[in-house]
Length: 280
Image (cartoon, rainbow, N blue to C red):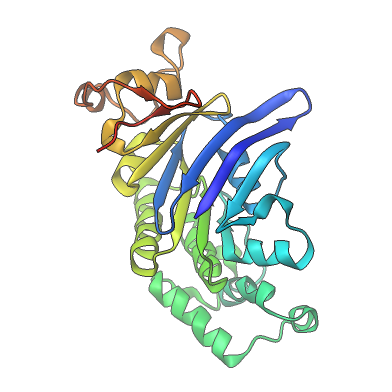
């Protein structure tokens, strides 16, 4: 179980994330939605410890992740795999080697420097590529692939880490609708088949509602909604995305039709002031 307790992150005078408290259970698939600048990416980067919280704590199964350093921090970043919008592959290396790089935190420094991957690791990497239906490009340079293929390579690399959790930071933002569906289907399948917790930042509400059983809405660095997709109301969406009055619109992906059928539910505020979904 992942626990985020009163976490704040400041960059100079700007507060990117403000007093966020969340508990994410093992095996959940959680979509984090909100406008650009809402604090979504900063939150995921703090969980993975790419950046540190200014205040508060992050815990996983009782271990204080936000205090880890050295080998313990590397183990956490192995167990908490990160997938990025821009894939973060090595373009000149072939796909298979890019996937094998997911094993680096399982290996000694000497073997990592020499890139001495075992036969078993290579078989496992091919298996991960087959699972994502891209084994046929295993020997191509990663930079020659389409965006959707590169993102699937990134997911295969994450699987090679044998993670307990996958954090996906806007994994489909740069993809066309067809490739976006393939990537989201892959993440959902991994979540269901392997029981791996998936937390993904998404711009579009429709995608979050289709793939995630729980949605966390952020605005101005704060959590303003936490609940099931069907509990989102028009008022809540306006809190997350901004109102039509300020020119922002509710969401670039929400049509008037999708707004009209949202249930008219009364919001519930928790003791910390964050808007929560009604209990089912």
